[in-house]
Image (cartoon, rainbow, N blue to C red):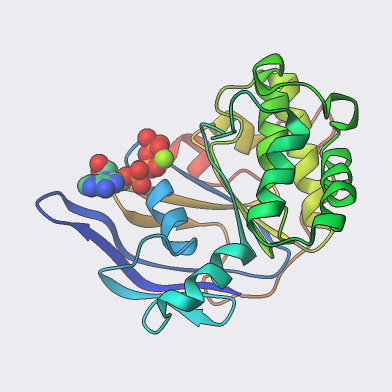
Length: 254
Ligand SMILES: Nc1ncnc2c1ncn2[C@@H]1O[C@H](COP(=O)(O)OP(=O)(O)OP(=O)(O)O)[C@@H](O)[C@H]1O
Ligand SMILES: [Mg+2]
């Protein structure tokens, strides 16, 4: 479904942002993508979104290859990949509903279908009662939910979430994580970039990919094991510390 094979991304005069990265993400799989600031998390996501192309290696997304994809095909790929930006990128001065409806409109949803679909998406992210609220009247966690609803407008098969909990408190973070488990339970893959090791420790059974200076230095699953495994059905019980099953990445690797 998503496969990176020996992928490098080099910027002129800036060296490698990614170097020889290989991993795959299966259908309905959830993985954390972690690493220091500048380690290449956002670069990886942009390559999967195909807004950037690798300088070496191949990125395959839903049957499309970065080697062969045409400009005309690019919009098809991007529609199938939901992207939640760290800074939300919502339309200011518009309501939660209008933000989602606008995304549906520009991607060619028939006018009659826009209202019910926008309402359904807002309900899915737990924001039915705030549909009419302006973006500036929403909390950070609520704005993040609007951004997630907007990323879901085209029924993507994968959701890329770049530091979605970076600015949220513990309670709002937990709410967003629960939302992601719901989304994943519907069969959508989720790749979530985060440098929050404490958060990763709370989900010890979840796959972790760790980047360091553009290299993939840790994958809690073998790269050859492309089979999707069940992920946590929900947050762990409060007494779980994650110590027993935590990855090397979360046990002091960073
Ligand atoms: N357009 C660009 N031109 C030149 N260098 C870039 C560009 N985009 C990213 N880089 C470099 O590539 C490296 C990886 O950047 P990237 O944004 O992927 O890191 P990140 O892991 O997402 O970091 P953060 O946690 O701070 O968001 C950094 O050294 C960055 O300076
Ligand atoms: Mg980043």
